[in-house]
Length: 381
Image (cartoon, rainbow, N blue to C red):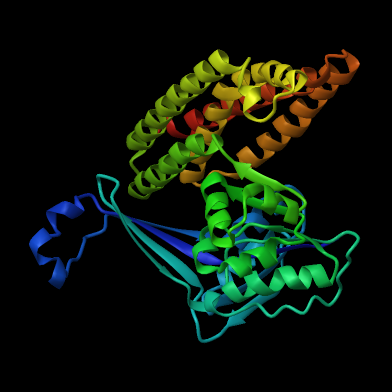
């Protein structure tokens, strides 16, 4: 079985400026802007959608094959990927181009100046698929070269390969027809709620009509509130890590924790108040509404644990500690959630609510483990 991961390969360079941009940018001189900032810290990370997805799959024991383009400075990154068992057979190296790169400067007020240079990503990967196996192979099309994002879904369909389509930040660059063609026949469409609305407007299709074109739609909704806070924590933590400022790392992380827990409390309160009637939003059937009200207890119970694990997973990413969380996530989701769900749902006969019992336990356990890991790595610095 092959897992083809199409998307970008890039370097992320994160620079921290200990001053404020506002002190150096004059509002009445914007038409002749010419500024320079003395950078206090620089962190370079391997990135790109295809690289990140393939690396995560490798941590879970898979052997993905990347479909992407890279440049003349890709050698070290490529060696790292191959050391994780990731195939570079589908990576086209452009000898006269650099690998795509994103350069980010953040000031002390968390204002940002960002520049992205696609470089080699401007060329398609041109992979020929010499040994496709329609019965077992999977494809993932993530943000990357636009020609690949248009052509690969058609190639996967022609070869009978199931594929997941995740257009992400490239949605504005794709036409409505491009999106419709790629979504049609996909096994899954993956977006957040905002992206799904963008696709709906670009294609002039309702969400229900889009769902009919694909095997399923995975859309992140409220989760994105937690993840948005946690992503901001990752950015601030990585900047402080570049300065080797460990007290600031802890301060930023626990400030994010307070925001996440406050948000969780609001979510729990709202679900608790409306759980008996919120099912009517989607159906008038009383039995379904009662089931929604019952399952709402599981959602209420896992909010704190979910927020905790999201926050500290991102804090650990900010200090480049990711292997531990991958192992613990596997243990909690597969070693705790699934067995507990089976035991409660089937052995004890608790039905649907029993199946979901494992999630509050696994998410809270994972959150506590990542919190403990973060404290161990930062409290003595």
